[in-house]
Image (cartoon, rainbow, N blue to C red; front, side):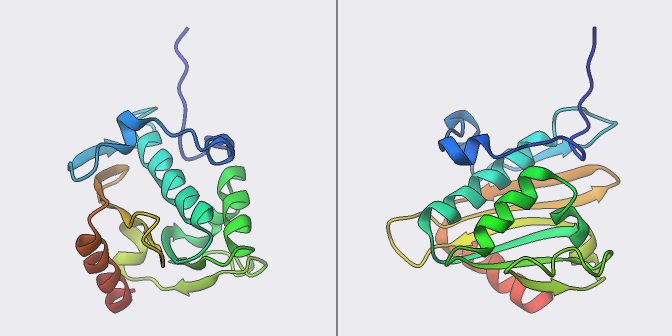
Length: 177
């Protein structure tokens, strides 16, 4: 029996963050450009972006300080998935300076979270999937995931641990979001 998983409604939970168990085979694919397709084109490819996003969020939470910047296209996505909501509640209650970006499609969604909210309607807000962490200590890695929606449900993506690249992505976000 074939089973299809719609990653847009997939319940990621927080198991990886609670155990710190992220597969090296995936987290080691940095600086390689790839394309993933979302549901219904593919029922699994987009899960890679979700896993790497969780990995970066977990790194920020484990570090306990620094800056995290995450785009959500629509801010309501902070509340429509259990694992995401729980992760951003944890981040909001930590000393990580957490910024979230998206179209404010539901005015009340993120207001109860202790986050810095950036809302807008430009293409950057609507078609970018960025999760970027800049630690304020040398004990943790800089890391950024960048995925651009090039067609409906199709993402051109890559992530990097290179501090200079992470800083350039951060500067772009500060200027264009």
